[in-house]
Image (cartoon, each protein chain N blue to C red):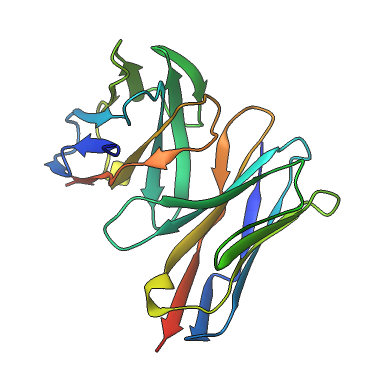
Length: 113
Length: 111
């Protein structure tokens, strides 16, 4: 079974721009969660989607948004990028909603200059 | 919200020795406790997990114990090998069904 895939793997953007990251979950998994990983804040939960509905959202500003498609693929969008948005963005999929048995992709490394 | 604290932040052991990483959580309603291993350039890998109705779980050289009363859980790795070197994260799913991570432990196994 193929694992979680994320594209692109690396991105460099300028302050003020917006970015869209993509995640394809493990086949059959309907839950997709997004996390931000930084050296200072560690791993922080952004949001979870299950069957195209946002189930949960972490403590991030409204510039961070996401969506899930009928094939369970998910995208997250960050608008008006700030330097502090530089991070590794990780996607995790699960057959179960709610944070259980999550399997992570390799992440997208976003650098904002 | 949930708060997960993890200790130590770095751990160095000799190959063949055991390693223990400890975590505490704040939300008594938390019911699921996974452990992840993250190698350089990769995403976290789920290595073992335990639910709140179980006190201990073992999988070959790794084991996890849970003390619900004290709100702490631990990862034990026996007969460590150089390939066990990585950053390990504990986590907890709370009543709000959100996964909260500890700060991580960098484990170094010296050959």
